[in-house]
Image 1 (spheres, rainbow, N blue to C red):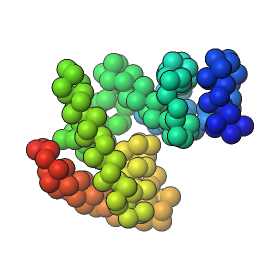
Image 2: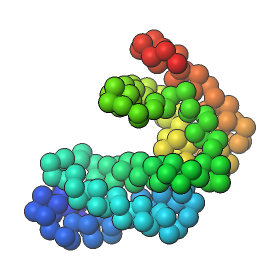
Image 3: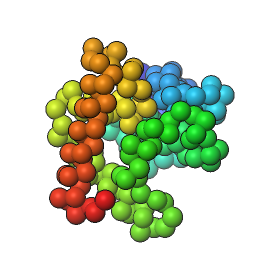
Length: 184
């Protein structure tokens, strides 16, 4: 079933919208949750929450790409679940959050949320400007939470080469954000 047909089911408040989303994107979203949470049961619970969130967001939201929209919701819910459990040290994802710590805003108040949203838009623009190889590496690392070893195997590079590429891209991102007025 095409995305637009599934979205129409959401707008009709047809329960089969969730089943169709699960059929098409459930495995994809579950794999994202598993990479972050490293626990099948928690990941399945996160996926259920993602479907509930989709149900509540569509309508009025009309996602341009249902797969990416679903993945982003799943990813954000998984990160929130990980934070709630204070599981960073046990999860093995500490390294990723440490690498991005200077770019992650706190969500303590509305002003911080607005700044975080603006920062997200700037980072998205930066990523779109990267060469395809660098863009793929940074997305696999920071969106899909893949290890440098997994990325290296996928693209035929050394693990050290991936680490160096990520380091250089983070430096470029920092410079870009500073030019955009974000003092980090």
